[in-house]
Length: 143
Length: 152
Image 1 (cartoon, helix red, strand yellow):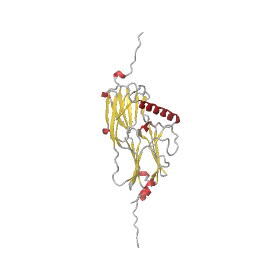
Image 2 (spheres, chains in turn red, purple):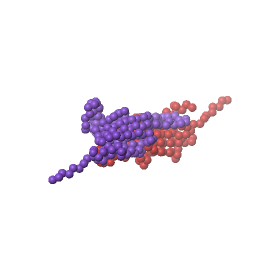
Image 3 (cartoon, one colour):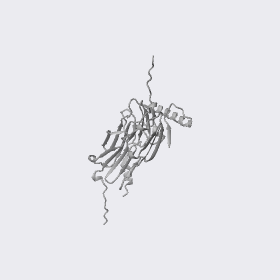
Image 4 (cartoon, chains in turn red, green):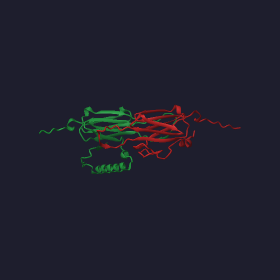
C-alpha cells in the first residue's frame, strides 16, 4: 500500500522548529519563565495507532502535561532543579527548563484510548486511530 | 576516551587550546544568559551531558541519559577520577510501521572526569531516576574544609 504521500502530512509540527537542539520556543509563546527545550522525538505509525516517543530526562510524571485538541497534540514537561542550594557549580553542560513540543495530527484519534507512559525519562504516547480512519480496501469493480 | 579537567581555577599546560576553548564557552554562556537564550552546553556534541556540582561534603555528578537500562552502565571511581560508560539502545518497532521521525540517538558512550578534589571511592552512591543519573561522591577526609579555631 503506498501511503507515503499521505503519511508525510500526517504528523507535522505547526511551525518548522524541528531541531533537536534547545530552542527558545515552538508553537505558542510561553509565559512561564525559564528555558524551553524541544525534546528529541520518534514517531511511527501502524494501521491502528500513532506512537510517539520523546526523551524528557528529569521530568516527573506529575509534571507532564499532554493535551490534544483540534488535532494539535501538545506535550510539555517541567524539570525541577535537582540541585540543593548549598551546591556550587563546577561544570555545567546542560540546563534544565521545560520540554515543550506540538504536533498537528491529520488522523482522527480516539481520545478516550490515549495511553501515556513515562519511564526513565522517556515518554511513550500511544494514540489509537478512530475506527473509521483505518485504511479500507477498495475493490474496483469492472463491468 | 575523553578526559576533562573540571577544576576551573587551576591552569593546565598539556593542552593550552582546551583552556581557550573553556574560556570561549564560558563567554558564550555569559552572553547567552544575558540575551535570555539557553546555553549551548550540549553543543560540544558530547554524550551524555554532565553537570558537576559540589558542596562541603560531596561532589555530585549528574548526567542526562534518558531511557537506558541501569545495568548497562559501568561506573568507576578512583581518587579524583570518575568514569562512566554505557550503551543506549533503541528497539525498533516490530511489525508493519512507518516512521515519521527518528530523532532519538543511540550508541555507546564513555566519559571520564578529573575531579577538583579527592573522593572516597568506597562510599560512592549512584542513582538513576527519571532518566537522570546522579553520582554522589563523598569527599575524602583530607579534602574537606576544616574549621580552625584561633587560640588567644
